[in-house]
Length: 452
Ligand code: ADP
Ligand code: ASP
Ligand code: MG
Image 1: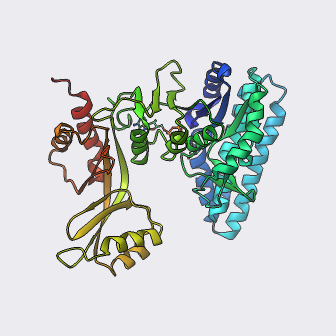
Image 2: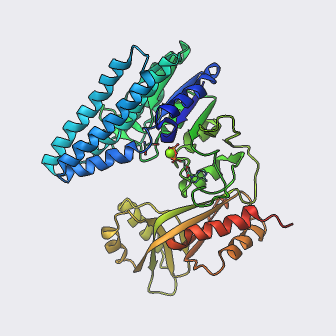
Image 3: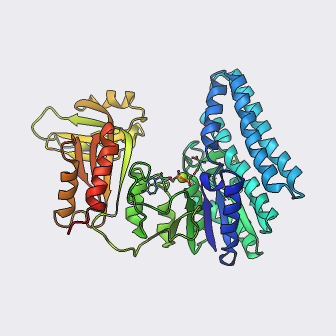
């Protein structure tokens, strides 16, 4: 069997859902399990509604709920026009939005929101889209069965970024999903959402539907995992920033994983790990161009000097210096213990003889951590930085790739430079404002320079 995951733009409206149905129809012989995201933009809208309600703006929250309800019901009408299921699906989807409206009422009275209620709301997009897509498939003659992802995707209770419990997921997937496939049916489930062991709705973090797909793929030892999106695969750079970015036909797991972690939004950073464990190839395809080659992510993709570049915006650099000439024994250990104690995750690290520089997300809660770091050294904070990653298996072989990178960056100010231990990721910290321009210059030098 295979896992086919369709992102928000691939289920954005009736026309997109019809394209998706045709893609799935063409794969029936390979026994697909379908994972879908919320309709494009819906998760953002839901989070906005939750915020409005909890800030006491009940009327505007309810009118946004109404807009979302109407958008979904319009797609039900368009897709299920001639189907006997139209009324049933209309009421199933209405139930979700009724639940949302009453949650909004409660939140606006309370005046605050917990991570748990936020997940209950954020997950409604996938609950609705998966019901809609399953019914639309049936209306087109595909024997689809809706599966409530919360029965399968078992997680811990870390709301907002729940940790999947792989053993429980495997047991549930074998009990609930596999038998459907064996009966020749197409299971359709929402990505991104799960439930804690006591049945409370959780989410896997933004963009988490890719992760859901690979977790189900690993649980059922699928033959391949397909991520269907709105671009022709993984490209040499984000096409929104670098218009000349080109599709990559094959890429190694470790390189794809670095790119995802350092800003290539086309793949959720956690997607690769479950597939790597079992060597399941991951494909990225364009649902608007289903005949395209796509990108194949595997162990055996060829090594290249440079494969792609990515940028992670909204980064802060923290520098901690000891007052002495040399690190005291235990200095680095103490610094990293503090990050650990305060649950702040670090992206890039560089050290000199007397100081250590690390990068963290702009959104990381720093106040308490900074106080603690000041006990061990002098601390400085630099905001509005960005990480540019140049990823390739041969980035460190010889000087040519690194030389080209540094030349392309020209006069731009470099705040930090680090080569990953696996030597496949060269990370460079720049001013955030320099990113679009620097990405285009790097791309031109690394991928578009055709002079011999
Ligand atoms: P989906 O809703 O299908 O999950 P996303 O918006 O999460 O889609 O991811 C697809 C987007 O990722 C593309 O439209 C593209 O702008 C962006 N992107 C960033 N970096 C890359 C890259 N290296 N290759 C392809 N797409 C990228
Ligand atoms: N709908 C969720 C989000 O927007 C998950 C996903 O699309 O992967 O983050
Ligand atoms: Mg995505």
